[in-house]
Image (cartoon, rainbow, N blue to C red; front, side):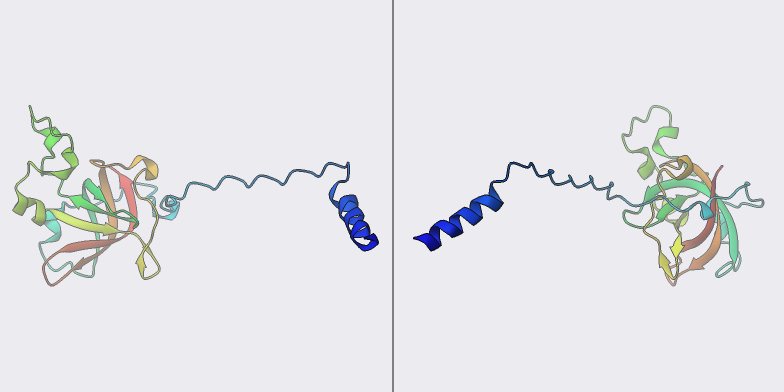
Length: 171
C-alpha cells in the first residue's frame, strides 16, 4: 500500500502542479498551395521588334530558330508554365457582334482547321522541362490578352508549333 500511495503522490505532484503551462503555439496557416508566378526574368522590359503572326511561323524554315510572335492567349495549361497562343487575326467569340458565348477564349466560333493552323503552344522552361509556375496573372496576363513572345520555335512531325519562350510582354 505504501508503494501505491507513494507512486500516486509522485504522479499527482508532477501532474497537478498549480503552474499553468503555456499553450502550445498554433501552427501557422499554410501558404496557398497554388503555383508561384512566372519568374520576372521572363518579362520583356521593352516590346520586342519584328513580331510576326502565328500563321507566319509556318512559312519558311524557322524550326529551331529564335522567333518573335504575337497573338492572343487562349488557354493556360494547369500545372505548367504554358499556354496556347492563337493567331491574332482569328476572331474570338466576344469579337463577333451579337455573339453571347460565355467562354469566348475557346474560339468555338472560329473554323476548327484555321484554329489548329493558327495555334502555337508556348512554354516557359525550368531547365530542360516546362516549369510549374503560373503564367495566368503574370503582369496582368489573362485569357484573351494580346501578347508578344520571344523564344525558340519547334515544329513536330505533325506540324504542331511550340515556342520555348525566353520572354513575354503584353502587346
